Length: 266
Image (cartoon, rainbow, N blue to C red; front, side, top):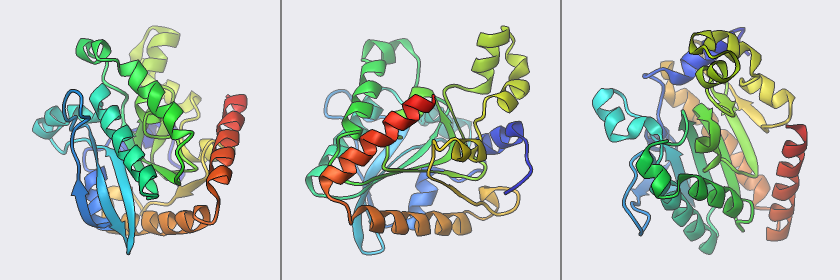
């Protein structure tokens, strides 16, 4: 693993050139069919999802989607989902459960969107419901943090039987800027906060919050998205093979115990 500081990894995780969910989907899966809408309000482009083949295995893929430039980020709301995004994700997860398809989620968001409309439409309730439902789904769930994994915005699609992080991704209860603002009333101390928060893959693996770290090429995943995607694919195939051997009850019981243990460590 690299000797980068936590703040270095925050900067890499936020890099605009870093591969997005849709890019990884293109590299890892075939026959991807994107599905839209929550059947209640609309389609949230900050979360993408649909059906795909992992080799010859049908799976459901869901992930936060950022943009490459200002125009795309405005369209994707900078990867910050509204309630309808989480409801779309849950709709796809329930469909996957019905047809016994493994669920794969890619986490990359600075947090859920905190606008007035989002609050009026039930942002907190939609995230809480996703967390509750994901703990009981009767199909394997694998979650991979590919960039930023911040706050409830990440947890809304991040509950899994296996959780992995790319080497230069981050996973935390809030952003370093938010931490610094709350603790010191000074967001300019974000770099100091990042180095205190234990948000790197190495930290979280040591604390047994995640199940593994996926290495990146020198300099970061953006230097070879194909190589990084291949490493992700290897992890996915191995994990699904292991999880498919378990009964539904074993999956649910082990998932429950996993998050009970994480809760006690927090």
